[in-house]
Image (tube, rainbow, N blue to C red; front, side, top):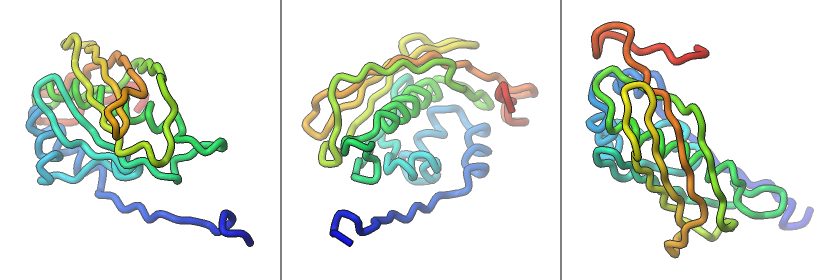
Length: 180
């Protein structure tokens, strides 16, 4: 067995996603996400899996970082485009979430990603910034970009998100997401 054939591994541990989601319905979006940034609440499991983390939020904006490594490579040795797509979907959704009142949720309707450069395992950490371009009561729009460690933009993304109002009074229950 050559050195390149020796299996590598990475251990992933995460917090209970239902506990995090329950907290999401009990606070305004900005307050909830700020608790994740501050470490009062854990990062969501997907962020842990992708070695990303929510690092900053303001009303209408969210920032993630992502430590890319060789476990994210596609068959030709570059970082898989799905990592960047997921990072953009996350940052666009969280940007919209910062504008939502207690009890409201969201889900992506459409995410459009325009790649500008490829990434290597040594390209990180990546920084993704999302901004709301049009908030809404039913549909919201956001845009964002992902930059490599040198600050070079490697992808831009645009998202349309469905805003989900609670079926009962705010804070009294989790809204149902279509398809659940």
